[in-house]
Structures are given as structure tokens and as C-alpha cells.
Amino acid sequence: MTRTLIVHRAGPGLSIQDTGRPGYLGFGLSRGGAADRLALAEGAALLGQDESHAALEMAGMGGEFEAGCDLRIALTGAPMRVSIDGARAAWNASHSLPAGARLSIGGVEAGCFGYLHLGGGIETPLLLGARAAHLSSGLGQTVAAGARLPVGTDPKAGETGLTLAVEPRFEGGVIRVVPSLQTDLFDPAERDRFMATTFHRDARGSRMGVRLNSKVPGFHSEAGLSVLSEVVVPGDIQITGDGTPFVLLGECQTTGGYPRIASVLPCDLPRVVQAPPGAALTFRLVELDEAVAAERRADEHRRGLRANLRPLVRDLHDIRDLLSYQLISGVTAGDDIERGRT
Image (tube, rainbow, N blue to C red; front, side, top):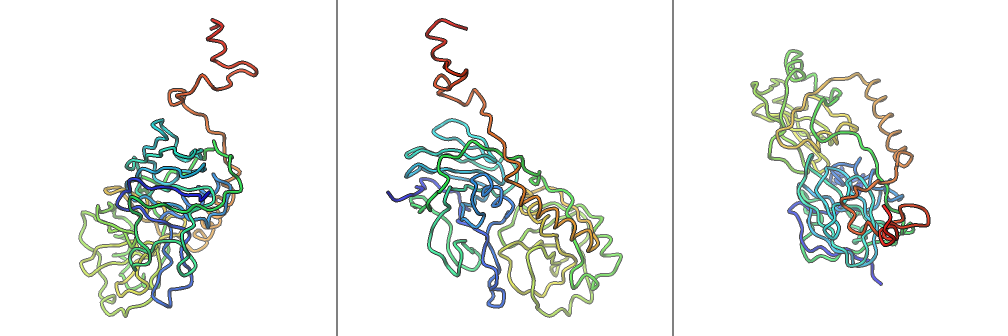
């Protein structure tokens, strides 16, 4: 039987994402892939599979899905209200989705990007070595209602009911940055003013970048007016002609002429990605040795995710078939009730 996930309703930003396409900058294509790659690793840990498997990325809104066969799923990233056949299900957890079951995922409750992972991953055709939709370049497209997504073979079918405590990253906060190649184009006073400013994420944004608003005058660099277009990467903070900062994300352009005042540490980029509109963001300049140490700790955290898995304890109010559960060894609650026991 073909393994599929049927899409009955799709949010406007629903797309298939994996770890992206490294190695194509010289051809004008940025890496792309999941906006929050840490969420991709968390889902892989919950399902006991490699994080290279493609998942569904949900930008702000989920959708309604039906299992075309028995499936395992995991939910990570920005928490959303979710239910399976009408019963509330936990986020940051793995679940069984039996054939014919309906999975409903609403809007975000915090953050911006949620992820639906499938045991075996989504197995749409590879394009330039990946399945990720690179929307800004027109490589792939969003997923629409009516789609039947092929799901790969799941060697660990049956292993569910696990949860994972995740690092808070859905409300903005302090973002660590290092100098870029163009930081020195800004006067020291202008750099200090940037680091002392509290910004708020603009409601406008995409997988290409995040616009930052503030109540202070824009940031400028006289020397930056003569910058030639050169390579840019995710995490770079560009200052546009009107002095507005933009943090570049995974689908950013590969070259740019706006001066860059700093670059966000890769391990802090998920906090920028998941900051909801209006969330406060401040930036702290760190030395290279502190940045390297932070990245090393983040890598250790990712590699240790599976060791932090815990059994999922379900809320009794969400278990509609509670009486069928084995509550005491050898005796079910249903047996007790039938026998008049309390």
C-alpha cells in the first residue's frame, strides 16, 4: 500500500522543507531549507530518524490532514493548537496517526513556524539534491489542499508517545552577533547605538528576511554608500538606504550591496526566525572565542536531543477511551466499574 498523507486544508505558508541545498551560492541559490533548523532536529529526535528527512513547515497556520495509512508524526517549532480526531494532542511530542485519522492544526500560539514530521519523511522528488521548496527562487511551491504527499518507509513504526523539553525561543530576546566584513564601515558611535537599541519585529517578513523597527533614527554609514555588491549569508544584518535593519534568513539573496553592521550567530538565528510580529529583539556583540564556544554548545545540544526524550504523560481529560487503558496491572478501569469498585 502506498504511504501517503492527504492534505484537506492548507495554511497559506505550508511547504515541504528539509536541511536545504548547500553548495549553490556560486549559482545564485541560497541554501534555503527549514527556517528553524533546530525544530527539524527536534522532530528527527522524537521519531528516531535522521534530520535530513523532509517535513512540513507551517508558517503561522497549519491545516487539516488525513493519514492514508498508519503513520507516526511529531510536532515541533512554534506551538499550535492540534487535535487528532477531535482529541487535543501535545506539541513537542510524537504520536500515532492511524489510517483514516484526521489531524487538525490551527494557528500559532507563540512563534512563527511550526513543523509536522512524519516517520520515514516526505518523499517528493529531489530537486538539486533536496526536497525543500525554495519559494523566493521559484524552486518548488507551497502545498495546497488536495495534495497527497508520499511518505517514506518508516523502520521504527510503532514507537511514539515521547516528548522533548525545548529551549524557549518564541518571544524574541537577546541575540548574539559578531562583526561582519563591513562592521567597520559604521562609526563606533553608530555601532554602539545599534547595540543599545531595542527593536521590534515588523509584521512584514518572509523566509528571506526579517525587518526590524525601532523608535530611534535610522542607522547610516557614509562609507557604506560605496559598497559593491558582494556575497551575503543568512544571519547578516543589512542596513538599507533609509537606515532600517534587516536580518537575512535562509532564502536570502546570495549577493547584496547594503552594508552589514553585524552577523547573527547561527545558533541564535532560530530565535530571530521564531520571533512573532512585535516581539522585542536586542543585539549583543560578542568576541570570536565566545561565539565559537556558543556554537559548540549548540552542536552538543543538538546531538544530545535523543538522550533528553521522555515518555509523554497525557492529560486524562484528553483521553476519550480512558476506560480501555490498563491502569493497574491485570485490571482495567472498566473492570473495576463493572464490579462496583471505587
